[in-house]
Image (cartoon, rainbow, N blue to C red; front, side, top):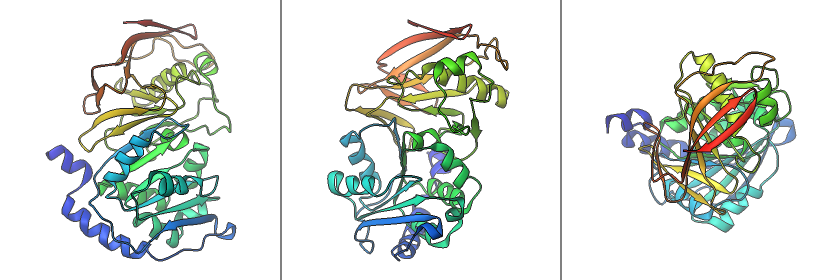
Length: 340
């Protein structure tokens, strides 16, 4: 219980913060391209939150939503007000949450078009009044460039410390780990390119953007099996471990149409529309060759599948009833994977 309190804050303080922030956020805002953001809303901003919020993380690999995962997350938001953050698109996600998932008082969307909006007082009022925050898909480099080091960045960390739910899909998931692939070169590196030049300019890593519970030594990745991303996640883990100077970095990849739902105590379960997995990549040792312009050599990497019948314990990275176990090796830039 001591660990849980230190990570998520005291519930009594949370209640006070939520009431105060909710009053401020009920004020409408008028975002335009001139202000650096666009704003959308649906529902009753003045409605009281029906229940209490609980700390939770919704880690989605992209694609379509598994309704059970969204219902789980909305419940932990106390069926209150959800705020969607994005850097492209419009109000499609907020309408899906409000109309198709339901059970929330309101949904607000902020679409960022520049870094200027991340310090806007009206934007910060909306974010601080959220009972739950969801970061949409798109281009994670825009999130890093627009938000990192801003007042919004601080407000997101405040939300997390207050013990409120947060989630992300695709690019929104990519930025949640303490170490992240930022796609800062304007592209999206594939596994073959990453494994054959792991220290090259195409592997653009970022760190310490958000301070998420249980993800302080984690790199996340998305659209996992469909886009054949195991090789590149292994590269991301190797790069982060080298930068940190320790071999305790863990990779978590999530398949499309799949969500890893993490409770306040770090227990996670998977919901999926297509029998997808969360993939746990945990070498616990350094790569034997990780050099600029040379292919990666990295052997004997345990890979564990977390399926619908599994339970992942992020406090210690243990898996109950794993869907599969395997061992991966990268030899001269080529991935080898065998059942364990």
